[in-house]
Structure formats: structure tokens, C-alpha cells
Length: 444
View 1 (cartoon, rainbow, N blue to C red):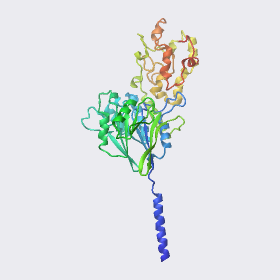
View 2 (view 1 turned 30 degrees about the vertical axis):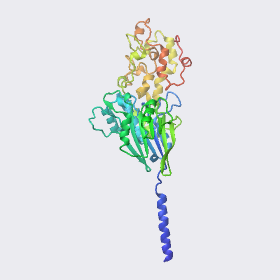
View 3 (view 1 turned 90 degrees about the vertical axis):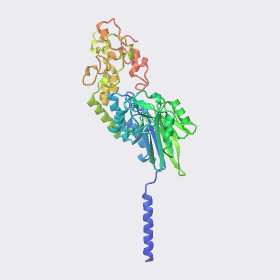
View 4 (view 1 turned 180 degrees about the vertical axis):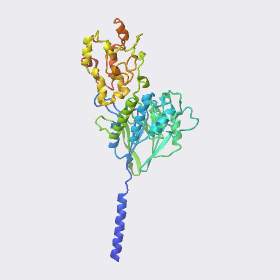
């Protein structure tokens, strides 16, 4: 009997040890990750190699940090790139991609305030996005706060309470359908309501604004901002650390917390680059495919995109400001036309087709002739004759020149190159070197 009793006790002890060993170990580390200033770049344009950014690679970077229960992912604002129907579709797709990455909350940045509050809240409903702002609300709110907008959020992971609130620089809000309050006092009101181990403010402000906010809020631990032009490395302002996530979503701000002697402390913080070498995350690739499919169905006309440059913006002062078409140039410029046919400009549309991006207006702008201009490219269904980079992409709408050759073309061609060959799409652009690839006529 004694032997049996001891065996029973031993079995019970072993069973208890097994239960304890099988119990999930509370996380001892936590990554606070903040994106920002995505500016509509759901994916890099792909016009040049080694472009950072894009949701497909952002998701892979997040996964590389560890299990999802040890990551708190949020956005400081600036995901939108405009308010047109096209930009709304793009914003929805970006937010859907964010949800696949476990987005907890999204500050409202200046680009988002271009949209009417009702529109932004409807987008939140469709994408299950939690907008956050302590100092911004609809001008006609009458004291009511929609579920889509909160002043703060407390996120708990492994026993640590992280309080997150957010603000926007009132000077950046130009849409009168929104009203703002002082950022510092709005944060202080939140801090009086909740206690937390770590207190973070997401602030859509420039660098001087972030520093001023930090000086007025010694009670918080971190202020993460954007846009600041360039990524801001962790900088201490009194007891507060400030940093930023900016530049078309190419960088994420990361704060790594570790539990040491029962206290959570920040052990690593700084910027993480969404490098081009990161793998493409399959769920995000599917989201991108869905986005392109949606664009293909809409086939937005140029006037629906908000991407058309006005004549004054191009410096043109032609009375007859109309695209004539490259075929109109052949009769007098046959040799130049042959040079054009041998260049990549003449096949620019095929480049988009190969990537399925021919349905994206942001790409159409630089791969068509006269995007949105009179006589120029309007939309895929109506403008097959205006695809590719034609004569008037560089020389300007030339109807007046066709009617009277003594009338000069609208643009000084050299000045037009950088409209598409900008730092983002063509970072190594040098006029003299690139001209050699398309040289014809008189060099201007």
C-alpha cells in the first residue's frame, strides 16, 4: 500500500510539472512598430531597382520580428495620397493590407483630413480600421463621437499596458469639415483618464513640432511622428524620446520593450528599413492583385483621379493647348520619329502591361501621352492610341504647332524629363547621359 501511495504521489507531481511546462510562457519582449507617411505607395512603382517600401515587404519585416502576439503595429497617419475616387480605392486597399498585418490603430494625418469625415468613417467601417485622434473631430459632430474615431487606446500584451493616443498639428488641417484642439492639452486629458506602463503619442507633425510637443509633455515616454522629410532617429527631449516613420512607408519606427526585474524597459529603438531584399508576403501580394483588379473594373478617367497637371503647372501658355498625337508629327519629323520608335519611350505602355500596372492611374501618368489633357490619354477603354511616351510627352500639346509650324511647341523638352524621371522613379537620372539614349533633332 505504501508503494502504491508513493507511486500515486509521484504521478500527481509529474502531472503538475507537465501542466506547468505546457502553460504558455508570458512574453518577455514586445515590439511597438509604427508605420507612417505611406502616401499611397501600396507598392513601389518598380521603375528602378532596389526600391524600398511596399506593403508586401512591410509585412515580411513585421513577421521577422517574432510572433504576432509580441508585436503592436500602428500607423502615425498619412496613408492617403489624395481625395479623388481613385485615391479612395487606393486608401481602402492600403488599410486592408494593414489589417492583414494586425493594425491596432491609425492616427489621422493631414492627407486623411482632405476627405470628408463621413467618407473617412465609412472607409473605416469597410476596412475595420480604428481611427485615432485626441485633438481632431468632425466640425458637425455636436459632441457625438463615431465608433470609428477614438481619442486613445490601451493595448495589453503579456501583462504590460501600453497607452497610445494621437494628435495632428492643427496648422496642417485645411479642410473646414474638421475642427482641431490644442495637441498638448488634448494629450494631457487622455493621460488623466488612464494609467499605463508605457505611454506613447503618435503625432502627425514635423520635427520642430515633435520637439515642442515633447517639451510640453514630460509625462509620456515616446512620441512617434511623421512626416519629417527624412527619418528621425531616436532623440531625447528631456525624459521623452521622439522618432519618426516617414518617406512613403520606406521605414518603420520600432521600440522594443523587454521585461527586466518585473519592469518593462525599452532596450532597442530606431528605424527599420523596408528593404527591397525582403521577400514578398503572399497575403499582401493577393491584396495588391485585388487592388489592381478593382482598378481594372473602374478604369478611372483622368478627371476622376486628381492627377492631371494644369496648363499653368507645366508653364504652357498656348492658346490652342491640345494634344495632336504622334502621328501628326511624322510628316515633318520622320527621322526623329524613327529614333523615337527605337527608344524605350515608344514601348513604355508594354512595361506596365507586363506588371499589370497599366490599370493604375499613377503609372499611366508617365507612360501615356497627354494624360488628362485635351486630346490626350483619358482612360484605357478610350485611349489606346495615346499609350506610350509620345512626342508631346516631352514637347507638349502641339495642335497649334501642327496648324502653324512657326508656332513653337508648348514645352521646353529638357524641363519635362524630371516630371517623370524624378528622384523616386529615376534616382540616377542625369540629362546628358539619358539624352544619349533618345537623341534626335536639336538638343535643347
